[in-house]
Structures are given as structure tokens and as C-alpha cells.
Image (cartoon, rainbow, N blue to C red; front, side, top):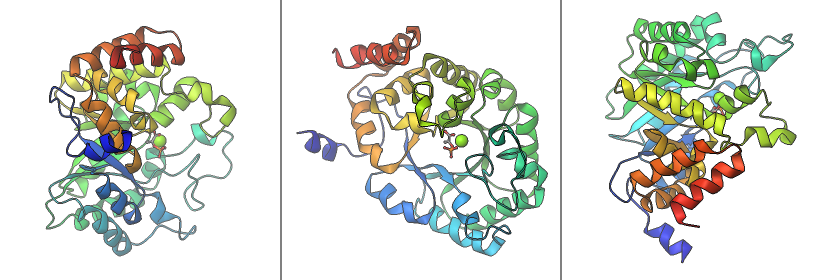
Length: 316
Ligand code: PEP
Ligand code: MG
């Protein structure tokens, strides 16, 4: 019965009363495209480009090699949206030639956008390759920077995008609590936000995402994390810009409804989760999602937040 319901779930993401929530795929390269298409992804909400940089630990891949790889992903989504994240090196994704080896706290060190601002030629090459890869295609290319801390970071990334003449929307990932608390300043510099809830939880709770025993503090149902998501979504709504989620949180069907209720405008996840999220959204009205979000934020623990949302959404 469950299988039949999932198979019947096709088409774009929407609540039962027709509120549209695009369901996008997280991909790590061209190899992930078939699964995204099979599961009906409406586009790509997070293209992690690190894979390209792993072949050769001594230097960045050349512009031609990058154009070829990006093109394979971009051409698979004609008319769709593909959000490419520029290189996120450092901490859990170290790269020999870019990541300082002597940092006492790599997660708090030079990583993500910070690395690219120290190596502007790497960022420029990547942006140029993306511009070339999208030439002549109908895909809506968007680019975003990882680990943006504030408006100054966002402005530096926006300037780099403009400098190469990139014809694409540019945005910032919200993965650091300061970015969520002051999202309005970031939105003055860029055109959209995308919440990276894995890192946002790590930094909000000072709990290393790679330490399994801290899973309780990495739980995306934590009310403090929901508050940071709400702050970001509210700031985006106030200026008419979009605010998606591309962290693991989006792949939990119940939480996907809560995120929708919090005002998140798109959900990006591993492709296999898309049918489950589509089916959960189709079973709730927007007002129900909003009530579930309120109930979850009123809770004191992750477990209580989940139970409260479940009561609103399923009556159980
Ligand atoms: C995140 O941090 O939530 C995210 C989407 O990026 P990554 O998992 O690649 O750090
Ligand atoms: Mg991240």
C-alpha cells in the first residue's frame, strides 16, 4: 500500500491545497543525475563540486575539465533550476593544496568561502567554468557560497560573481548561526539563501558533525535549530527572496512539512528521499504545516518537537 502511494506520488512538490514547494536533488557530480531524474527531482538544490577536486591533491582541476563536468549536470535539467555550490574545502572536506594543515580547530578555521577568498584564482576559474558550461542551455543556473558568516562575506562573493560576468543568480548558504541571526544583511548582497542544516546544527550546538556520540545535538528537530531556520526564512520573505533547505533536515518527510510551515521555499535532498517527502507534503495543507511548525518551535526538546508536529500532521 505504501509502495503504491509512493509510486502514485509524481509531479512537482505541493501541499494538498496546492502550495508549491519545489523538490530538488542534492548531487555530487554527473553520476548522481540518473537517480535525481528517476525520482522526479525538479532540479538540483545542491551540487557539491568538491568531487572534481579530489582527483589531484596537488592542484585545482583546469577550467576545461570543470566545464565538461558541470555541463553534464546542467544539461540534464532543461528549463529547471540547478544550484551549484562553489568549492567547500576544509574541515570535514580537506584539500591538500588549499587547506592549512596546522589549524588547531579546522572546523573553525579557513574553510568554505574563507578558503576561496584566500585563493581568488580558484574561485574565478570555477565561476568562469560555470558560466561557460551554462552557455546555450535553458537551465536556470544559480551559484552559492558555503560558510558565509555575514554581509561582508556575502558582498565579497557577489563581487566575484559580477567580476566574471556570470549570468546566474548568486546566493549564500546559511550554515553559521551569525548568518541566520543577521540574514537581512546577507540578503542585501545576494539574491537567495540556502540553509545547510548539517553545519548550522554543528555550529549552533558546538557539536562536531563527525562525532557520532553527539547525535542528540545534531538532531535537526532541535528547537534552537528550528528558530535559526525561521529567522532566515522570515528575513528572506520580508524582501521577497527565496530561502531553501539543502541539509539532511529536508529529507525527513515530517520535518519537510515543518520546514514548509516555517516559510522555507524549496527542499533539496538525496534523490531517494524525494518520493517520501512529496507524499508527506501532498497529505498536509499549508495551514497544517504552519501549525506543525508552531507546535514544534513551542517544544523544549527535539523529541517533543517531533511528537508535537506529528500530532498536528497525522492526528496521532
Ligand atoms: C550542510 O552543511 O548542511 C550542507 C548542505 O553542506 P555539507 O553537508 O556539504 O557541508
Ligand atoms: Mg555544509
